[in-house]
Image 1: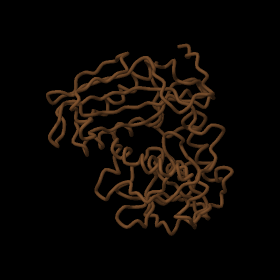
Image 2: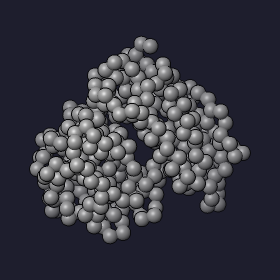
Image 3: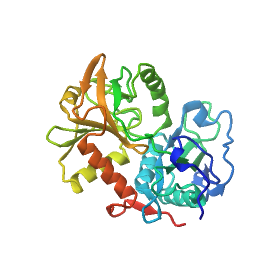
Image 4: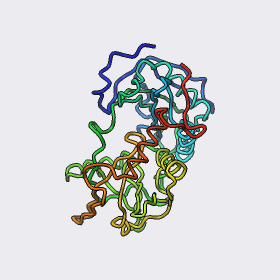
Length: 342
């Protein structure tokens, strides 16, 4: 199919309506068969569970055009599973994993003209989400739900390359022990908005959240996991029950071990250790890896040896290898690349 007449190289990371989306409703204890629609609006009760008690979860993944001209999605099975985990924690009915994957196939195929061409730097962002749709006034789960998936073409997260950012140690807590930090609930991101706006007003790009229990260990940022590199080239990533299990982080860890032959440690990372690392990055779907050049702890600066001009050498290799896998330039592990039937 011929691509849309879009200036792909100048796309921002924002929302552009496309032609079709997927909708399925849960009622009387079961999901309906689902349907495609051109209607981009959502109509729900003023007393819907999502509006009263934030009963909602979501996922984020991307479709790419590979070097071979195929339309593919990166590890969507893991997004499907993570959404099931999120739904269970929020007392929502899980949307079946096979149907999640079918919805992705349908929506991307229906909007394949919006999948940016290979080499443009742009991608098609996919947003599956689910929310309580029936009226709820007492504090309890809704009885009815809606699952939807839409797509939008987006530009690269970093225009002109990924320059190292400066982050601050936040005075706010992201997630409590035994809370909801390990799932992709909208409420987690709502509570981070004040913290990120505050950080931006103070001249920082992001927050480093410490664990809420002791405020001594590194957790994550508002929307990405941390990845550190030691001076002897060991890749270290924080481990905590309140960290969201990033699919990008898991993939980078595999790449570090099996493609680059690096030692990897997933463990508790005391904040006091941060000054000893040579490189630091934030990993997530949007940017793959955002390099961090400096961490500021209430006026005290921690500057990484990799500097403020470019990615550190190990993080650059990780970025190049994973994006090479996603774009078809490097052979992928079995099951990582899901081709869309178009």
